[in-house]
Amino acid sequence: MAALGEALRAAVAALLLLGWGAHGLYFHIGETEKRCFIEEIPDETMVIGNYRTQLWDKQSESFLPSTPGLGMHVEVKDPDGKVVLSRQYGSEGRFTFTSHTPGEHQICLHSNSTRMALFAGGKLYREERFRMTSESTNQRVLWWSIAQTIILILTGIWQMRHLKSFFEAKKLV
Image 1: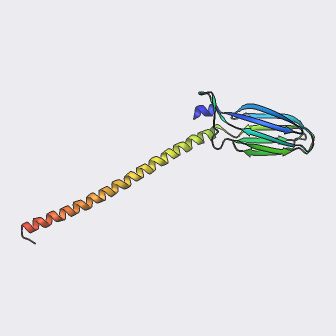
Image 2: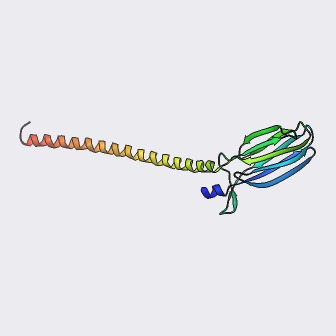
Image 3: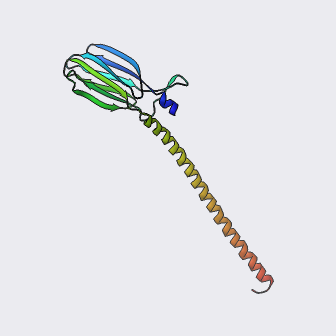
């Protein structure tokens, strides 16, 4: 899991639809990197961005499906530096904003993943495995105690019959 943590790459396909034309971007960012783009956007223009994040596995040199918790943070600033959009999204989705001021808008994307999030994924796996082991052990202890109880009852019945036959043979009963 740590090798995957070091090999994390967020593959982001951002499709920005601006005005009558459309511009597409495809880029890779690391787990702690931040990518910003400056785009000239006219007044009152709706901008839609589609993205997808995936883990890059160095060993197989291919993208893996994203893990739960992996996502994208999108922040958009208008030409005056005011934040138009600042929001956390899931591993795949779409963000939308409308420009209210014409000019150069700054669109920044970065993964919300950290090494701690990847370690948390490993921790959850270990917790799940530990829980399964505990339940299995609990089940075995339950059956062992039932078996011991049955053996104890059968031993008690055998002893009473044996003592009864002993006393009958000695004619004490």
